Image (tube, rainbow, N blue to C red; front, side, top):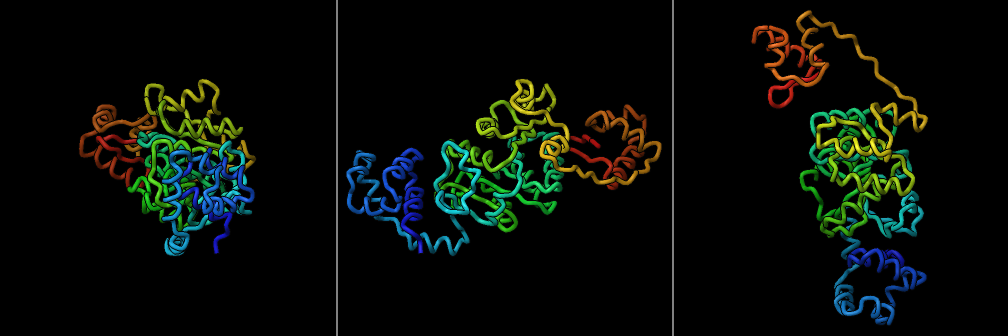
Length: 358
């Protein structure tokens, strides 16, 4: 049975009221459950608050069914918590506009674990992908929960890496569960719901808007002890997450990148202007929180003379096939054989455009 207090928060969410209107209603009606009877009786405060929109607002209320909503929760395995519940994430009280209600799937207890947000561009370079995987893997192995926004690019890589290495991950949506965005990540969302936590402040049928993503980012920041930006262009939405973190006194970490790459412009500027700490290894973050950095010992790989020559050249950076042939002087057949063998052994990897890297 849903309490009147919960009904009030659910209704405000379902009717997509602004945070300001919700705050005004909460401040006026104490307890908040009185909001429902006020609606039934056309209270003058509500008529004044909604002005010309009141009749439309009242009509939408009369069409809403709490019984249908309860059935939805049961069928879709969706749960909710409100700002008045004991299990509501305490970190969200740091926000200037704390969500009044959260809908979620998975393990809500993860909000109480030590966590780090990893955010960045939706279209990372090969460098950005590798860096994100490296940090997400090591931070996961150190026991940190990975928080992100379940978007494409850095967000997706961060969640996938946490799951791959058996860690915890929290995904914060900028839409409702029934209007999931982006659709390409729907299978990943299911995995997170089963093995982590996925949550949103938006009613299940809420369609993502441009402004709902920056709003989502404030929750990502608040749930985390620190925010790591691995790769981001100057107009990246991840900068909202950075700004929210700074406002709340939350650590910001930034990975430096190629100074000629537009995709690293924001991360480099964060460091340049002192808006975050420069990190070049996961140990930089773990030391900040007094967590021991456990590196896995790698078996020493024996290389042939030809393979060693290729490896030493690739350590300088990505090279294409022609560069390798010109540098080594190997025949096409010999070079292909060496590259294939080194790929199979996991020493190097092939990139699009016939490029190779360690």
